[in-house]
Image 1 (spheres, rainbow, N blue to C red):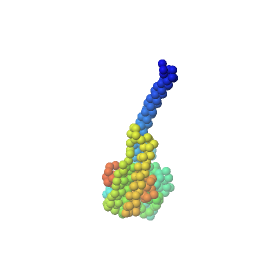
Image 2: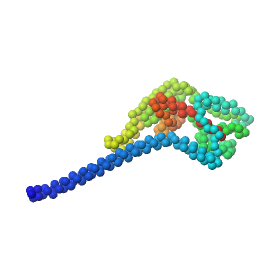
Image 3: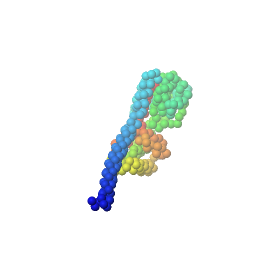
Image 4: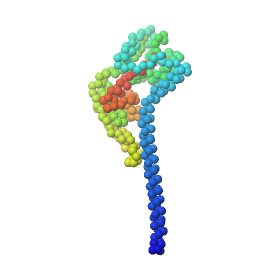
Length: 297
C-alpha cells in the first residue's frame, strides 16, 4: 500500500524488468564470446592445415602435369633425387661427355614460361618437359643422345651456351668451400657453418611462440598482436645470430612466410620442411637443400 502511494511499486517493477533485460544481454554477450572463441580456434586450425598443405603444392602440381602428359605432352623417361656420392657419380659422368665444336648445350632456365629460343630449338617437341622442370639446369647434345634437367640449389644467372662439353659448375649443385646454412621457423633457429659437407660450427635455439588462442582470456586482436610481436622478436634474434657467423656465403631455408625477411642477407633462400629440435632439424634442412632432382627427357 505504502509502495503504491510513494510510487515505489512501479519503480520496483521497472528495476525487475531492467534486471531481466540485463541477464538477457549478458547471456547474449556470453554466447557471442563463445562463438568468437570457437571461430578463432577454427581459424587457427585452418591456418595450421594450410601451412602443411603448402608444402604439398609442388607435388600436386607435378601430378597435374603428369595427367597433362598423358594427353600428349610427353613424360620424363626417368626422375630421381640425387645427393652425396650418387650426385657425384652423375656429375662425373656428365663431365666426360665430349662433342665436336658447339656440340653440347648447357643452359639455366629460371622460368618455364619464358623458354630461351636456343633451348626451344635444341629440345624440339620435348620443350613442355623443360618448362615443367624449370627452374633447372638443362643439358643436351646436338645428336640428341642425351637430354636431362637438374634442379639447382644455388642457381646461376640465366644463360644458354653451346660448347665441346657441358659447362656445369659444381658450386650450383653441391656443397663446396665454406658456407653457412640457417634454418628459420617461427619457433626455432639453427645455424650451421660448413666446409664442404663437414659441419664445423653450430648454433641454435627455440623460441616460446603462442600458437593457440583458447576460449576466454585474450581477445582475438590482442592474441594476434602478441603472436606477431613474438615472431618479430624471434626474427630479430635470428638476424642477430646470423650476423655473428664466420663465413660470407649464406643460404637461408625454412618457413616460406619468413624467408622474405632474410632475402637481403642471404645468397639463396629456399622453403624446406624440417622438424625436430634445432640440430636435427638443421641436418634435415641441409640434406633437403643439397638434394638435386634429376629428370631425363
